[in-house]
Length: 452
Ligand code: NDP
Image (cartoon, rainbow, N blue to C red):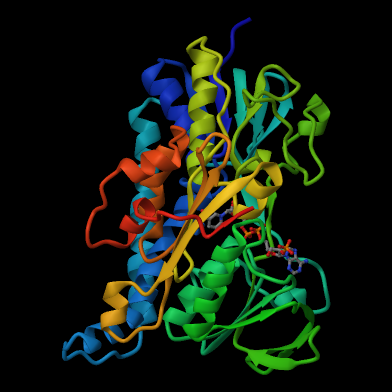
């Protein structure tokens, strides 16, 4: 049977574009891709990239204070949001163009339309055109979800935060995950009076407790009103503001309320039920280790499969899919020991197990040090950083590495290589310190602070 294409990709985000480009460009496959929104997907258009640029913008307030403390004659003014936003929009436009060109230059035919699956080898575009393909790859990503409660429609999400008309004077951010905690730091740094509600006992659930504790403490030191054990009961419009009634009995008014309470896979109305593709409890597409659904010609990668919802993981899944399907080399996706960074202020880099998870698994030694970094201490800052290693007593392998410090994302990328290679504590010890940097503490911690 002949098909229009070897591969039809639905979704032009990080995962879909990578799979399409490698299948076409490196493997000579005939590939098409449909995208209903902007090319680049969540990461490029409304996620990692604009977020990081906003982190950079927000960090200058602290940098300027430090500069003054170092003797510089600088006077911090406010952030010109409009100027920053215009540049942000231009940069996103540029990057979208880059993504479109990647597809074009690799011979991928793209359709700026929504597509859904009709049968195991057919997709239908929004204009009714049908295309057949030997393989269909679904890479439609995810979207933020806001729980339903009185006034929930007044909340914005991370989709809108990048394009505020003006910088608000006050913001409430609800949630304690990556997105909420990152934006609390961003808004605070930009000079917005920032409150964060988290319903649980400590933000960043699932990560190392000591690291979470320090991050929360430092966020509070930076001026963020982090209210733990607190949730929204109802919201009402009051003039230009939003009045928020909270579970702790308080009532406050905010210019903007942003919900970052999790994301849902974009797997609705894709025709999946009709062809028998299974979906999980959160609505995600169920796939095996090769990203294959129960329908052999249909695969899915990235956030729509709700495995590990990170851009580099979606890219890996896309590459492994191409390796498996177009190179005849079945390649399972390796989801073990993924280093990651959370751009809170202070930044958090982490790989492997938290102390709590490691101790539940086997006897461990815990090496940890917390200190005032030289650069900040000189400027009179009280900020502390944390370097922490969790070591298996049996194998001596480093099971987890957690860094809370400026630049922790850069550090954990490198520490991640050692941990992924199975480095032992003694391997870390054998490595000569780089001096004077914060990360040298990773190779100079001699005695465990505790066993667990
Ligand atoms: P998360 O799932 O990480 O966090 C959701 C937060 O909202 C949790 O604190 C959760 O609380 C809370 N929550 C959930 N439901 C409710 C509710 N009904 N009312 C109040 N609070 C609620 O989601 P995010 O949206 O922050 O991030 C989504 C994913 O995006 C992440 O898991 C990550 O994979 C990815 N991401 C990665 C980044 C990076 O690498 N730096 C940056 C941003 C996102 P509880 O803990 O109690 O469940």
